[in-house]
Structure formats: C-alpha cells, structure tokens
Length: 336
Image 1 (cartoon, one colour):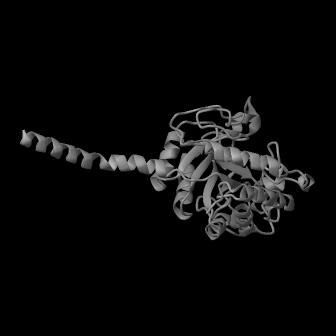
Image 2 (tube, rainbow, N blue to C red; image 1 turned 90 degrees about the vertical axis):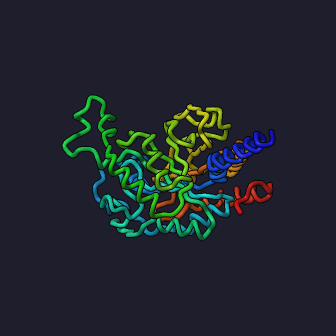
Image 3 (cartoon, rainbow, N blue to C red; image 1 turned 45 degrees about the vertical axis):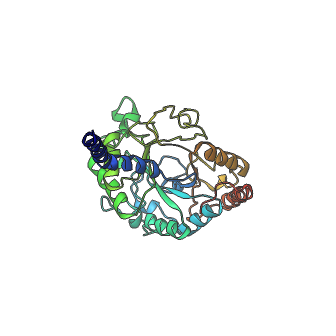
C-alpha cells in the first residue's frame, strides 16, 4: 500500500515538473500584456505637407520638408499629459518610411530632414519613460506595377489595392522589430489590403522577432491580439461598442481593446493646413475617454499630429496640459 502511495506521489511530482513550463508559459502570456492606458499617436508624414489625408502621386522625396523633428517635445508633452506610451506612424499607404530603412530610397533620411525620426523618438521615449508602439500600413502604393493606371480599372480603387509585396513587408517589419528596441504593439492598417502577406502570417512574423509584442489589425482580423477601434470609444473587450465605425468584431482571444481618434476631430489624422489651427477636441472630452479607458482596461491612443515644423501645436499642448492636471488631481492612473 505504501509503495502504491509512493508511486502515486512520484507520478504526481513528475507530472508537475512536466507541466510547469506550460503553466509558467500561460502565466507569462497574461503578465506580458503591457499595462498601458493612454498614449499619443503621432501621424506625421507626406500628408502633413499635402493638405490631404491620403497623399498620392508624389515622387520627390524632398516633398517632405519639415524644419525639424522635436521628438523630445512630443514625449515631454505626452508625459506631462499622463500618457504612458507613444504610437508612431512608421509608414502610411504612400510607402514613405519614417525610419532609415534599407529596403527603399523612399525614406526620411533621404529627405531634406536627413534624420531617422524613429531612432530619435526611441531615445526620447527612453528619456521620458514612455513605451513605444508602431503604426504600419500593410499596403504600399510604391509596389503597384508601373505599367498600370487607375483608369485601367472599372473600379479605380482596385488599382490602389494592388500595392502588395510580401517580401518588402516582411523585410520592413523585421527592421522595425530588430533595430528599435521593444515594441509594445503594432497597429496594422488594412485600409488598402494586407500587402501580400496574410494576417496570420504577419502576426507570426512579428512574434518571431518580438514574442511579447501585441499585434492588431484595424479591420478586426482575429489573427491579432488587439481589437483596434479607429474613431472608437471606451468599451469592454467583449463588446463591439468601442470598435468605431470600421470594426464591429468581437473575439474571445483578443487580449486588449484599443481605440483612437484625432485631436483635430472628425477624420483629420494629419496636421494638413494652418487654417485648422483653432480646431481641437476639448480637454474634458479627452479626460472622459481616459477615464473610460481605465474603467475597461483599454489602450487609448490620442492622435496628435505635429505641424510642418516638427512640433506639436500650441493649442494641443495647452489642451493636453489640462488633461494632465485633471488626471493628477483625480489621483487616478499616472505612469510611474
């Protein structure tokens, strides 16, 4: 009887040893979800100079001609506002890269600025204790075959959806994952197609280099970890109410719900014209949504597009200062 009991105890002990890695793995997956709530979404690219949200037909890299890129200012304002991360647009649909990529000459370091903005931003994030997340357009209009024209298609929009090159997408994501430190999450923009690499493969590719990095797709693709909410609002993970007009999908495997909208209002993601300098969402609205993000455990990425001098607008700074005061006075979640 004692030998049977000993054998049972031995088997139990061995099973615990065998399953311990699985238990630790499950625990680590839960603990690896970043404790982020409020971030600054930086949209700053060709569209900052075109007066358009989507910039097509530009082939001169000098079109992007800011007088500077004050990444320290971006991060300082974000920190003072009670934010804990920066979400940075690395590449929009036009394919212009805001980092020193080796995959194309269509990049910021070949522009008059001649500066790897992402690398500078990474240093500023470290300086101010902010995490870094990245926006990436899956499609790339520079990949559309040169012998095709929009008028060749019955539906001209089909032309723009042909900006696909899976190897380019993989190479650029590898650079971002391996050269700029830990990435909290990727905000993948599917508006112009998946870029030739499906979403499950995209997620697996990112995690090959950064296992702890979360991935989200703005069309609600369930291959990701996050339910993105473009023009969304605070809401529970198991409800579609926060997903905005473009994403009503719920999925039990999502780890977080995110929402984002521009401080300019409507769908003005980029600073596009000085005529809009007086347009700004109120501090009260932003603070209310911050409270909602805390309540539901959301990521709230407020888009604050820098102007053509590479600095944030005065009205944005003043508004965010008010938000920071509200957060501190309420003694709610303040980044450590």
